[in-house]
Image 1 (cartoon, rainbow, N blue to C red):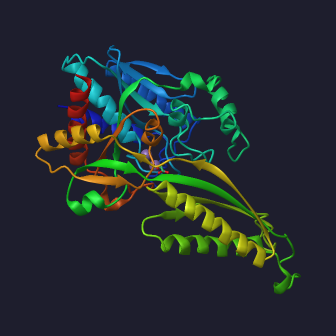
Image 2: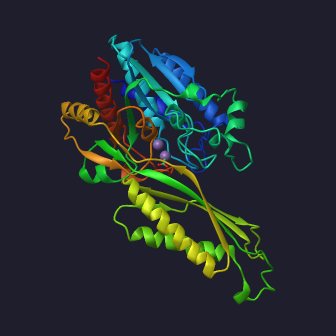
Image 3: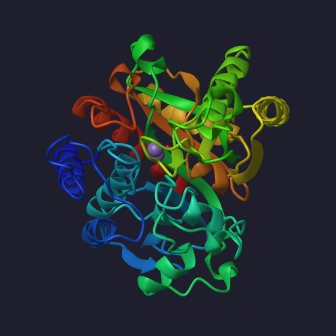
Length: 403
Ligand code: GLV
Ligand code: MN
Ligand code: MN
C-alpha cells in the first residue's frame, strides 16, 4: 500500500511552484527558475524515497532505487503548458516516487533496479519543440534540434549550458537497457468519466505532428490601400486555419489545432505582412496523419495563390503513434482487478514521453479519471480518491514487475 496523504501533500506542494495566483494556472517551463525549484523539490522527494539522484546529459532527472541488472523505468514530466493544471505530468512523477518510497519502507527487495524519471521538457512550451528528454533517451534528439530557439532567440543548447549541462555527445543520454517503462497519467479526456471508472489501461497513444506555417503578404497602409489590391497575410491565414478545421472535421478520428499565431508587424493601422501559425495534427494512425498533412498543405497553397501571398511550412516535430505492450497491459489489468475494479482499455489522445520510450522498450500506461475531461487548463482535476486508487494499482504492478 502507498501513503496516499503523503502523495497528495507532495502534489499540492509541487503545484505551488510556478503558480499564477490570479488564475490558479501553473507555468513551469524548461530551464527557468521555476523549473529549477521544481527539480530541487522532486530531488528531495526522490532522496526521501531511498533513491540516489542523477541528472543525465540533457537534464532528465533520474532517481535510482536498488541494484539488479535489469531496469524498470517509471516516469513522466514536471514542466507545464502555459497556464497548465496541477496533475498533467506531475502526478506521474510523484506517484512513481511514492511507489518507490512504499517499496523502500516496506523493505521489499525487488530483484530489478527501479528508476524514476522526470523527463526534460515534455510539453514543448518554450521552444515549440517537446519531449526533449525522452527523445534523447531514445537516441532520436539531434544536434540540429538543439539549435531551435525560444521567443528571445535562446537555443535549447544555450539554455542547457546555462543550467550547467553538457549535452554533447547526445548519445550520452541514450538508453538501451530498459526492461519495461510504465507511466501513470491523468486521462485528459472524458472516456473514463463516461464509463464511471477511476482508472484505465492505455492501448495506444495518438502522436502529434507539429507544423509551422508562414504566410507572407505585403505590409501596407490600412487606410490608403484599396481592398482589391491587398496582400493581407492575416486574412489569408484565417482562411487557411478554417480550411484546416474543415478538412479535419471530415475525418473520423483525426484532430487538428492552430494554437499559436504571430502577426507582423501587429499594428492597428497596418495590413499584416507576415503571419506564422502552428498546426498540431494528431491521429493514432501514422498513415492518416501523413495523408492529411499532404492534403492540408496542398489546400493552403491553393489559398495562398488565390490570395496572392506566399506560403512556406516546416515540420517542428513529427512523432510516431505508439502501441503499449500487451504483457504490460495485462499486468496493469490484473492489478486493477485485484482492487475489485473492472479493467478497461482506452487510447490516449494526448502525447506522452512514453511515445519515445516505445522506440526502444516495452511501455505501459495507466490513466486516472479526469473531471469533465479538462486538461491544459487550471481547472484540470482528478479526485484524491481516484489518485490513491490508481497509485495503489501502479504500486502493485511495479512490485510484480520488479520482483
Ligand atoms: C502534451 O500534453 C501533448 O499531448 O502535447
Ligand atoms: Mn500536457
Ligand atoms: Mn503530460
